[in-house]
Image (cartoon, rainbow, N blue to C red; front, side):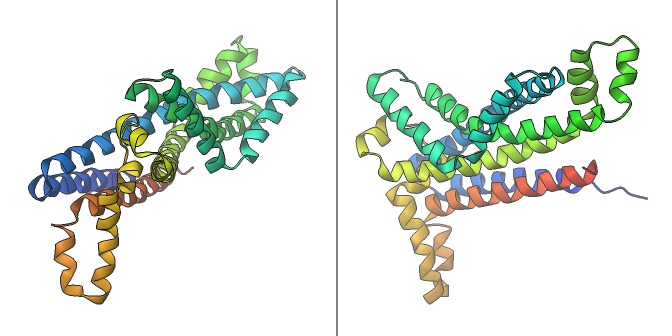
Length: 281
C-alpha cells in the first residue's frame, strides 16, 4: 500500500512551490528594481524569523531549566524568575515591539547600530523576548511531566547527574518533537509580528530614515506607496471583474508582497498542525 507524506511535509512542499511560482512570475512581469526589492524583503524577513526562533529556543530553554532547578532547591530566585516571566507575558506584544523599534531609531540616530545586519539582529532579539515565553512554557511542562513519573528517580538511581537528565534525557531525547512544533509556531508568530510592526513603523517613520537606514522587509515593503496602491487596486475587481488579470501584471509588487505574507502564515500554521498530528502531541 502506497504511503502518502504527512500533511506537514505536504504543506512544506506547497509553501516552497508556491513561493517559487510567485518569484518566477515576478521575474517575468515585474520590473527589475521592484523584483529586487521583493526578493530582498523576503530574504530579510526569513532571516529575521530564523534568528528569532534560535534566540527564543535558547532563552526559553535557559529560563525553563533554570526555573525547574530553582523550584527543586526551593530558592528565592524561583519567585523572581517566575515574576519576570509573568511580567513579560502580561505586556502587550505590539506595545513591547514598538518600544523596541523606538530604541532602534535612537540607536540609528546615535550611530550605535549602523549596519542592516545589526538592525535585523536587534529586531529579532526584541521579538524573541516576547516569544521565548512560549518555549519556556513547553519546556517547563515537559520537565514536570517526566519528573512526576519514575523517569527521573530511576535515572538518579543509576548515578546520572540531574543536569544531564533534564537537558539530555528529557528535553533532547524525548521532547525534540515538541520543541520542533513550537519552533515552527514561533517562526510563524515572528513573521506575523515583524510584518505587522514593520508596516506600522514604516508608515510612521520619516522618509529619510525609512529609505536610507532601515532594511526592507515584507512589512515595510507593503507600506510603500506603490505597494499600497497595488493593494487598493484590488478593490476595482469588485466593481469591474474584467480588471482582475491586470492585478497580476500591472500591480505585482503589492499583490505579490501581500500574497507572500498571507500564504507563508497559512502554510506555517498547517505545517505546525501536521507536526502535531504526526507525533500525536
